[in-house]
Length: 202
Image 1 (cartoon, one colour):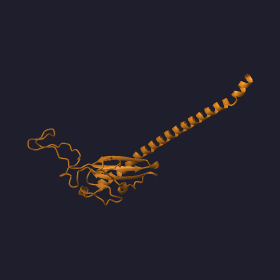
Image 2 (image 1 turned 45 degrees about the horizontal axis):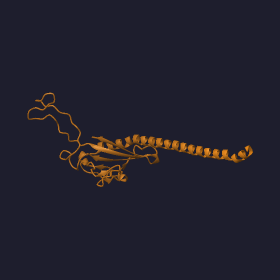
Image 3 (image 1 turned 180 degrees about the vertical axis):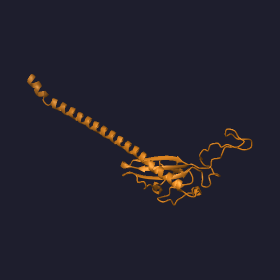
């Protein structure tokens, strides 16, 4: 009886061992894939964060261009002839989608190939920086007579007023006329990481 029982159990342990080995192999592969995925995600987040820091170059380039425009009335209209691309619009681009992910069918994706590429100062190796400027006005023209997002101006004082308040018939508060400008910067970095940064300046 014992000899027959032993002969019937031959190979069972090997079969169980193979099943355990396959299960352990699958668990090991799953663990390696999980670690690799976490590493890739962490790396992509690091690249994206770096791209956001690089975007400061584009913001500064756009600000320098704005401060160098003379006469300032040039900013009342679109400027398609900026060196490096079509980078300035005298309105806030109500129907333009700068990120390319707005589901509104009335929005038109902005073509970043037409934006201004920043070459000086040169971005770090592996990064490309481009920017576009929108004046925050509903339309082109003198910001005094059109709807614009304007900077706040503090109250002034008059000879007959007290503590900067308004005297009878004469208001001490000045009307702000300088429009604000929105600089949108797009940075393309390693592993096709893309970051967008916006700054409002005046």
